[in-house]
Image 1: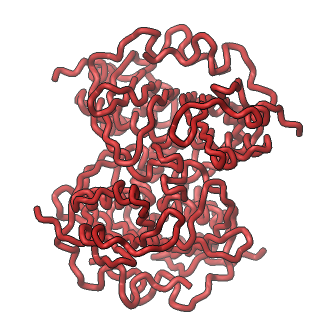
Image 2: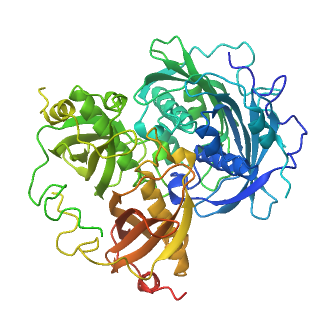
Image 3: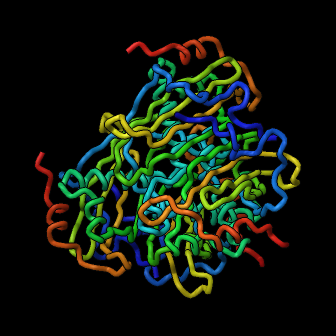
Length: 156
Length: 156
Length: 156
Length: 156
């Protein structure tokens, strides 16, 4: 059964939870190849942008994601959610904000916001839920040192 | 604020709702270009597969999606959700099941299941929420004839 | 230096060479996600379609590409070329024809034609050049049994 | 017939032509979603990177590509070629160099080089041939002001 993604211990923010303070922000521009015949960025591309956000988030915490995989640990995506609020068009510049909502050895929830360059308008928001697996795909507990790094707020 | 996707009138199925009876099913095969370095289909591709399901669902109801756009109506994606249960690998054959969970002039919710070929194992499940907009992006009410066609259970 | 792709021993067909007789043909439909804001299939997608053609070509010869990789052999793309003649739009059905132009232990050249469903209009044509490498990326000679299978004309 | 791409007036560089002096260079990083199960960037992605190069090339000449389309002119891709020399892996940083090889009202040829960050190693090289079309897809002559801007060497 597909339980509602936010029932019980919601992986997503609850009704009035603000976006976490300890986010990292990167700038992106919409590629021509990312548009569709509606003239806007296709819905699937947002999941790629979330992934770019995760990559830079992990790097900012001193644990580049590539290094995690080199240790035989894979943070597979167990769930993805995106709410599309405003369209993005070819060549638009925008910000991707990425933060960790919750993390444990068993599950990590990243949350994302796409904002216009002035930071005022929310373009999209979403989350991804991750579990750690080994090379054979068996679920494992995230090693303590990786967990600590991802969980540590960035000291700017 | 990002309200939980399933609070109140859940766009997703509630805790024990079964997948709708009136689904259409198509077969797909994982492309090499759809894999990533984990050796499995990348999470973004599932949104493309959901879209393939919608395309065939609309066609099966006698209202090809291209015909909807030719009338100046666009069913934009307002939300997407996917739960990834089992990995898919290059060249794997699988089924995509697509159904309408709820539909009104204002909002249409498609639900999806990806299943193994024997129909026994759930690979992934998810939903997309759509609103109708006109050429300028203004939200409109879905015309009654289109609504009726999409809402009509398929008579096989 | 980038030598011209067709000088000397052209990997592509020479001026008046016909498309090889022993091609395999598959049918495809343009996905919505494959269109761009011009309203046509994006140029990069043709390389995915060529790849689908190769997958089915190898399967038709009794040597599924996945089996080749399971033996630790990878047919990496060393060159790709595509000439785009007619646009493809969302939901268009078309044929992909795939054949082998030349093959040796060192190099395999696949050629492709995209045709309208009546077989009369050429949509696009191109080729890809492949070399075999092992798991570490070192160039190897294609094993004789694989070479023989790919080189054998299909007996329909 | 598919004539050889470089016969006669080669759209590609001839045997010993150097890469044009008046290129622009941008930095990119390989996205996780751009890798495939070989663990390297998929061959189709290079066409997206070439496109990013064109976008920044046009901007550097004072004629953003989006402005060209706003005038109802589309620079469609008539041919693409890529030679893949060295693999790119997840998170690799590299340079994309873009230049115009030839330009006339009828045809524009962009050439590309992907280089490692030290500028010493060629990762890939290629070209794309473009013709200008109007909104209905009819071939037109590129307006003189656009042609002049794209043809003008960048004064750094």
